[in-house]
Image (tube, rainbow, N blue to C red; front, side):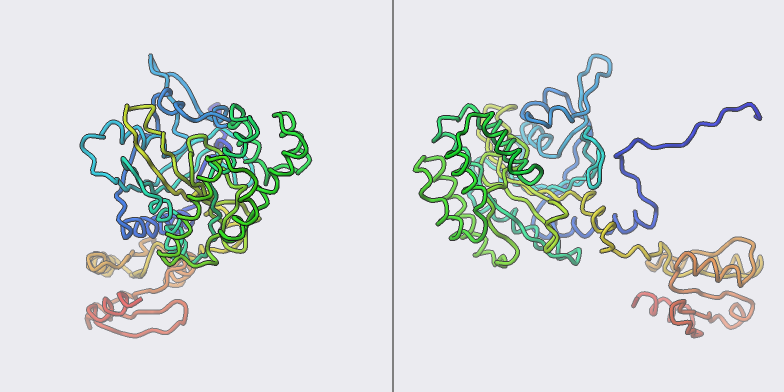
Length: 437
């Protein structure tokens, strides 16, 4: 054994791992979001972490292709999923004849992107999606997905602001310049507006064929932000191209539906610089930010993808969805001290003193658990004082003392560890007290 070479324990950079107290909070967040989705009539779905490469690469494109984890196993060419939307399209295509449309589903799961790890960017992270798929989807569903951010963030005691655009506006503008064949490349440039300097963006635009006047018009569009009426007045006369005007008209309808759904004016706005990085988006697009903290970056986004299933079945299937980057959101909440990790997996600790009281304590623990109370016996052979210190260290909020006197009287001392107050009660009363907390 002395000659055994030990392996240094280490973890791949950019991959997700939490301490148990953090994991408790994280799972609580997931549970709250699942309840929101269910309350809004979305059904749960789970798809594999791996897919055939031809499925996942069907319509990724742009910089994303470089980030996909792709490998072979036997004769299979496979990829780790980079989002949850393409697998959804595959699922819908395979089950098209048995699904009821519109099909509303939510999914929370890990996705993988081989980008450079940095603050707020991970190679493995959770996504949380809600999508609506149908043979023909009115724009009302776009508004419903945007509105969904409100109850999601409310459940987490946060406020959000959603910035909304429509890719047809920029696509129509590029068409008016005769650059429709450059639309994909130009959208990638626009998506970097918040990441690069204006000079760098201008340089990239010129490389793609825009002159100074056209760049000025483009920045008039990209700088349009505010209410629908405000952005409409700024850009409505830039071009009469039908695609451009259609995008503007669709935004007007989405705005009308959001108002009908009573989405507060201070929780959304229009920002025509929003395009999203995925090329499968075809109309409405949006990104969500923690209110007052836009500098921390987007923690969610989504949009409409009318043509996604067309790669898998010969039918017109429309979709719209929203996503929350749960890992990124959690990292922000942790870094910004916006979340409390002072929590315990135990509601009440039971202190015993010898073999007889230990067995009685174990029976007591079992009955408390059967009544929905997270009880645990502090079972190590330590002194009473050491066990109390252990309870404080583990932040256990209540202690039940189970000694000889308690066994004889069939009552127990319940101690509140925060206030140091204690009462002597029968078990039935203790259960009532703990279930009030």
